[in-house]
Length: 214
Image 1 (cartoon, rainbow, N blue to C red):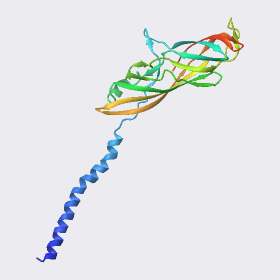
Image 2 (image 1 turned 90 degrees about the horizontal axis):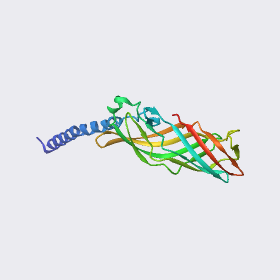
Image 3 (image 1 turned 180 degrees about the vertical axis):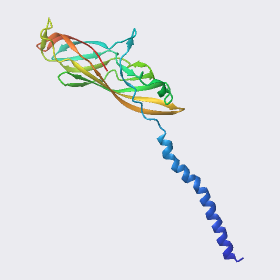
């Protein structure tokens, strides 16, 4: 066999050997999208919730406003939370029972359609699949515009009143050892606010109350 023929055979064996090793690499690359697709979708069963007190859903809230210069601060107690009771046992097959969350923003909408953003009450908390968890602390809204109106006897009733509370939350759910998925959620409560008291000359005291519904 000539030197040229021997060189050609060696080169051919080298090419075939390289091709054989390249097959697993291609297969692994093709499998990568499948692995990323295995991340579970964010659950839709976690919703705006209210605490359960004595077996009853308790969404009652109150907030007193001391008005100066037609402006006041409104605080809402921690009667708002995440309701994961609709998730059921099927979701525990996907996610581990406990999850954590961070409150990113809270917005109060009054019945006059003015909106206010809370800089207080935003924090981290934890919840559990199949239960209702409370948000940590109260949401506090400052510089809420409250015009003159109302009366000491409540006739006519004072307006405007709190209408809705909108909270944006980022939840983190574990679905495996060291594996988690982050899920942004927007939660809305109807506040059904009413008010007693009055504001005269930009000064007064108002007592707001209502029963929130999710």
